[in-house]
Image 1 (cartoon, rainbow, N blue to C red):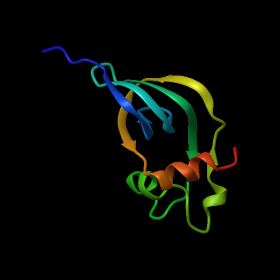
Image 2 (tube, helix red, strand yellow):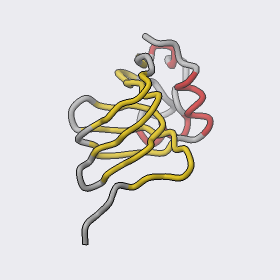
Image 3 (cartoon, helix red, strand yellow):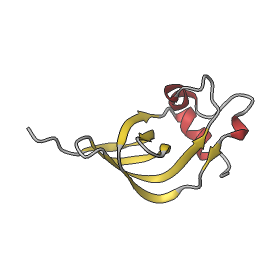
Length: 106
């Protein structure tokens, strides 16, 4: 059976992990599990982050937080992106999303 791209009717803000460049956050429009390609909007590169426990799933739940959160390095948002080599997609909570959207580009 041929797998198709997974598209969502509702908006999903997520942490997107690929095999080469690390982590991104953004609104996932389409995720093809066969080709491991994500098409997303408002994508930002997460170069370095500080969170509650340091794990990626905690980052998806709590976002940037703690005493060193201001030292996180989050890139500027691009209008849209096609990301390849996707290994994980973690849906973010509203709280986590707000921390990314309010973070200063660095």
